Length: 202
Image 1 (cartoon, helix red, strand yellow):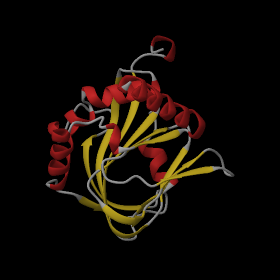
Image 2: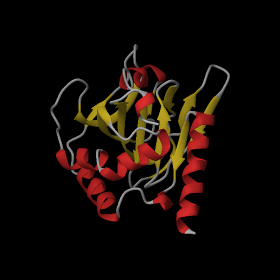
Image 3: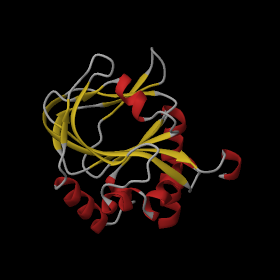
Image 4: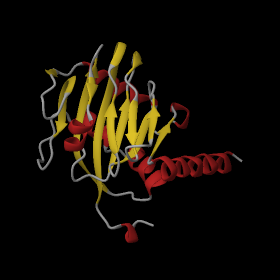
């Protein structure tokens, strides 16, 4: 009975992804174990973040700490990277996107405070060469900061992830995060690329 419920839940998430180009995974699915959540929250709270402010070409504002940069093998924090790259996360990706093996192109920890945001231009650079984006929301209390997924100029889907929720989204569409109204939002962003063509992952 439990397996049947889990199967239906996964099918619903996959259906949402196919329809909206993204799906929000509630903490009730418990893809990460309790100790993994505790570890990643603790480790990200101890990082030496650097404040990034908006520029004319890529407007944005937030505090950031890069865990893995694009086209480098350097991992700044192995513990955080191991959680993002864990068997549990790969199981999530396989369940929703049908490919179990992937490279993490970029991985960054972000802190957003009042007024902070991410523009379409900045996100285009972050997800460049990737196929999917994982947005992991850590322990946070905030208002605003909605994550927008743009299918085209006329259609967009709005998501508001809460603590311990994961947003899986396609890099085929545009992404942005609206300004935070109050509080603090802590996230981990990871851009993914499958190691094998789609024909090998079905």
